[in-house]
Image 1 (cartoon, helix red, strand yellow):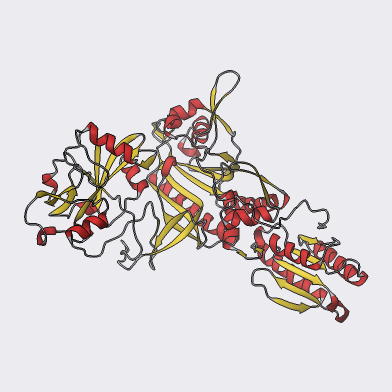
Image 2: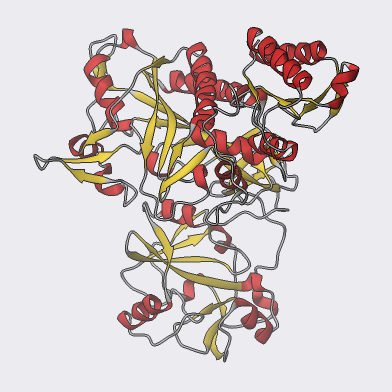
Length: 578
């Protein structure tokens, strides 16, 4: 490809709406162009990257025994009603009506469709287990699309679904897919961790995410990990806590309500009473699926909202506003402002406690009276019927690994893949069954396995870049190399550059020659911005029979003969393709 013909326009500045480095780099280097909020055009350079990611994914999925198919992007309401997700999925599901008033949606995922296909085809245990996958565009109407391709509304995804007759076969395929994913991301040049995670709207009892570890702002979640093999997303991580004072008997000898003026925060209350925050019971009001829920937790700890949402079986969660809290107080006959609420006297509302509450004694808690708290309280003083305990706590670095007891570390991660053990979540409600060896109808035991194709490409930019531009891993780079004649008006430079270009092409190297009549600085900046793994510059040293050879990843510059430069690149490409 000649640079003069390449469909690309690089920009001098980063787009004003770009927040993370992958969005900035891909837009500035001419890979993507925004169409509307969360929706992007994939320009030729980007499309070459995506096709290479897809090729790697297909290769490893096929090797793992999965079979490819393609399902419709538009899905009928009826199947989503069968699974129970039409209402439960939430506003992210883009619903529409056709000219015949049939309700449909744009597919954010394909569990319903694949389950319907399976129940029509997989009639006998003799046809199982099997694994089917597709690569296709998806659409989720994100409330706040951001981070470019990392959190758009439309995106390209590989999703696979396995069908088995037993939990044992499901777990076998789960491990098979985990290994395939490890191979895929390694080939894409990404360092990933497989971490325990929340199953979210997909469902299922066991799930893991493959996270690209990064220190950039694009990291979506904290990943807690240990020197042993423990690793978990923040919404699923658990830990053992260091010893702490949780019995306030040294401070309070009886339960009573006292004045605590202007103590709206935990810090103010602890300072006013001269106590550690570990003997304060914190009461937080959340709105889960439009209904109030009160979460109780030791005051020095933080509620992890996904854990709370799952504990009450919800699909959407947010912290309550001050107005909502005051309205809740009024409905229960109280006149208290935020900072002084507590569970005592609250009726007809779900109250759930974190496990840290179990061992608390003689603690301090709000009593739904402004400027007052109860001290020396115990759970028996609060009159809570059927209090349910769950792990609601957000883990913090330095707490202890639940497997080996060592201190947990934390880093940021970008999710690029996930795997779920669905069990019968979809097969039972959709009556998707097979006949076993005894002729009895039984639901499939299902698994689900997703990879974000466009997210993987963006994550590669997050992991491989510098201040000058992208450093594509060789396997997914749009082109392997660029040849730059410093001056196209110099006949010798142009002749050698053209010969290099043709030799590389004839040896299977994907190469661009920058034949533009531009200043050398413009050519070099564009090459670094676009991120060609190898760069050959033909300049004045060609009079000595030498060209400058640069490896983009490490910036190493060496002088080689033209034939040596060709040999290095050809061998590198062959090793990568082996």
